[in-house]
Every structure is written in structure tokens, then in C-alpha cells.
Image (cartoon, rainbow, N blue to C red; front, top):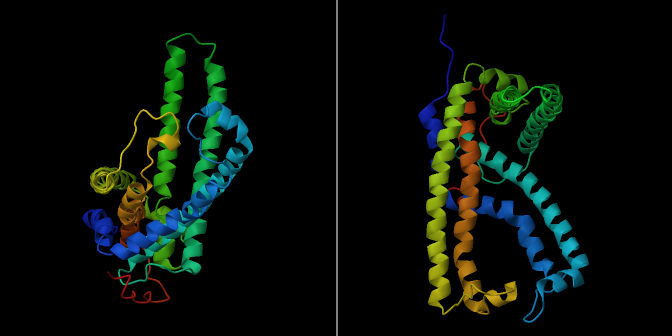
Length: 308
């Protein structure tokens, strides 16, 4: 009997680090993710002015309640748009992981297929969470008549079982979207079968990748904060930590804007790298486990900017 093919664990771990060699692509991905807020934030000041010196914050909130609510609506719309753009960027990161010479930016059937499978998987997981929550209310009501510690142990056991079921479903469906990109067709069945017998291995992969991403992110934020602080204070910027209103925190706008400009590209790069960490390992695993190659052939080669 032939041995079942498996994915290369080491190559999956290395996948996001290989994408670090494309800095312009990662910066572009980060810009796309933050695009909704880059458009919304400049307009928020039109809804209400910042509090000025001598104005009580509670009074200011009452006077500008309508504008504050409008700003909240626009921020929520931007958040939803950011979710969809994040799915698009995840599709690009998956494509580049599967085909290193592929373009980092494209919109076509692959991206649509990837997005639809991601949404379907999310719906399936949320439906399970909703069903388990309803069952949990029933279980809680049934156990409520029991005295302690039986009631507490029963509720804790149900929460543990429900959590395991949600994690299991998430792991069993985690390769459906990248498998669809790898095969060039909706691969719900192939993605489900590919995770069979590999739940623990995939869980270990995700945990190690999450730890690596945390270390990289903390280190990167420390470097970015140092750069921003050096620029701000180097240009004579001052911060009043005892300020009563946001407008009083600093009046040194030139150093503040200079510091923001200095850290913008690193922050965008870090955002794109975060997308790479979230999908590249699973895309690498899907490539190893794909039952058949794409029928459409290789993706077009990368442009000169994408390959930088």
C-alpha cells in the first residue's frame, strides 16, 4: 500500500519568510488593507472639531454627538471594507506562495473563488458557534438545578467540548481556500480530505507560526517606535502626558507629521507581512497536498517591482 503524500512542515514554516524578499509587494498589500481608513480618517475632522483648551470633554461630546455618531458609522463601514480587502490580499499572498514568480496584485476568477470559499468557511464556523451557543443555553438550564460542584463541572466540560469542536472544524476547513487557488477550481472536497489525519500537524504548524509572527511583530514594533520617537524628539517635538484633551497632547505638528511619515512604510510593510504569516504556511501545505495541478498553467511572471 502506497504511503499518503504529506506536506513539508519546514517548507510551510519558511513560506512567510520567503515573501519577505518582496518588500514593495508587502508594502502594497499593507496599503490595500489600510486603504479604507486612509480615505476616511482625513474626513473625520469634518464631522466634529477636536476639543480645545478650556472646554469640558463631556460638554464637547454633547455638542458634537451627531458628528461623533456619523464618524462612527463611517469607521464601521471602513472596517467592513477592510475585511473584504484583507481577503483579497490573502488571495494575493496565497497566489505568490504557490507561484513565486506570480504577480503580487491581480483580480480575477482565482481571487473571486478564494474569497467565496473563505466566506463559506467563515459562515460554517459561525453557524457551528451559534448552534453550540443555543445548545449551551439548554445545557446550562438543565444543569442549573444541580448543586455545586456538579453544575460548574458540567458547564466547564461543555465549554471545553464546544471549543474543541470549533477548533476541529476550523482546522478541517483551513485548506479549502488555498486548495481552491492551487487547483484552479472550487476544492471544498479536496480541501476537506487533505486535512484528514493531519489535524494535529496543522494545529502545531499554526501555533508555531503564531509564535514566530508574535516575536517578529514585537521586534518590528519596537524598531518602528524607536524610529518614530527619534524623528519626533530629534525635531524638537514635545508631549504633555498630563494633557486634559487630545488637542493639548502636542502642538508640535511638524515633528509629529515627520515621525508619522518616517514610520508609514515600515508599518505598511509589517501589515503585509502579517497577511503573509496568516496564509502562506497553509498555502504551502495546500500546494504539497493538491491532488492535481492547475489546468490553466503557471501564473504570469512577476513585474520588476513585484520581484523586489
